[in-house]
Length: 298
Image 1 (cartoon, rainbow, N blue to C red):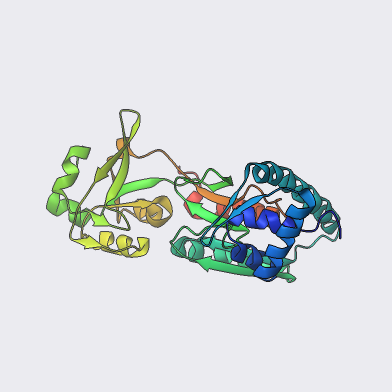
Image 2: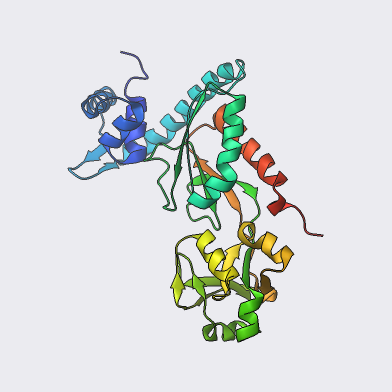
């Protein structure tokens, strides 16, 4: 028996809240995780976890012990990874998640470039518009768009993100352009995944409920409908920038453009940032900066 026995199992259970999820993360059986945690509690002569049929929670001693164990694991992993870094090339499994359209067009080409440079690396990308739990899903990295909600994650800003209200000239010829936010209810608004659009008014962010006869949870589909003159749309810069430049779309109410948000790389703060994640984040930031969608306007 070594002093480390049970610590990885305890930390995984504490972070994920389930023995089964901890077992999946560690690649061992749930019964083995349970035995190791029980033996650790016996050695410490104190209970670390409250167990029930549905959930696991920390005792007061468990909260204190978890904080120390996380620092120990991070220091251990950092020491091992420092030696691994001497070998140079990233290797092993990298699990990433991203929104579908942005992932297909922007992120995957860059990850494919990275994998070509590092053939010992294995990449698993999950493209979904759902907000997946990084810890429960054992993801190394998530690419998120817009405003960040989860403060328990560490975030690196990869690129800017601006939202534009716009419409095709054909729509504006038939219905005119809105000159204030109060005029939006008179217009047909092309809805994406939400019927609430965000603007800025009087120095504050202002959410506005909009309505229309068309809705689809795909930015590309919204863009196509807008180009056909169906109605107004609110989309990020990477969808509309080229069309604004060509004149096939016109930007509207620019004085009420919502505060710029961003494209973010997120990873759990209790995990040491491995060389492969660090290098991928740097590559994504550099690669996105070269995209025409993110070049400064003249």
